[in-house]
Image: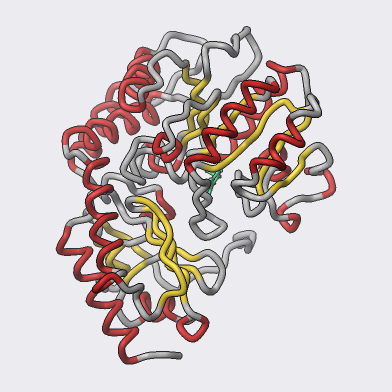
Length: 382
Ligand SMILES: Cc1ncc(COP(=O)(O)O)c(C=O)c1O
């Protein structure tokens, strides 16, 4: 049997990693400015993470959600404390798409309504409901119909009011910062208006922090720059540094009942332990603060003498969630970074490079990246 071919693959196989460095099977070294798609929050092979998971595995790797699991309770308490959502409750699942799927279901159960408002450029995952609210018809089969979804432009306050005032919406789903679209931020003032209108018209506000959460932007969740509180926050990628897990953080207004949601693997002992180890490191090593500092570093580095870097059309993002919109003549830059400089970065189409490095990124590695950037952009205008 061969693999079902759905991914475009680079011809590189990383087999080992330490912090922000990776090695392939031939021993070649790479710098990880991609974090395996914003997943590696505390760096590769962190000793505390390895120790916690190994010790848990030796005790108990898994038991079902039919019994008490104090690791889940501890995780809920710790996420509440780290995020400021202490009075909310947590449902654990296995991925970002699953977290969004459950959030949409909860919004619909809570309101008894079925329409959802989503945004142009959105990405919320590939499962049925998550694909329906993702603004990419290519990801939807006829079965994943978006019939009950309306898409409007990001930060269009009038469109929000026009739609929500119809009274047919169960909820609104919005990314803290749009990642797959190429790092687009909703205005803080727009989020405040959105919050106000969701409350006014009884729609559940779901903020998808799957990519933008867990300290990446310099706050625990990106939407917290605006000061608003969501009704539901979804989280996944950076939560357990690669161990599959997702979380739905749910307002006390939304009442649970037995059987409403469920999962076999979600919140298992190993996943919770991995997530707790990640929180330990985020807190002990002040990684949210580090993300903010390194974000400031890149902002300055890409605006030397106050002018935008000559290879860029635009610089977008917060903290270590950065979108570099390239001028058309630099569209091959991501591949050159990888092939010539051995630096992994992310993409959003051919003309946006996404930087999503581990939150442990050092000044030295950040400066090394800028050196490579300048080496390529000063000699190459391909
Ligand atoms: C904002 C956002 N939501 C949801 C998802 C889906 O997460 P997963 O791939 O874990 O299902 C992603 C993945 O890229 C994402 O960026």
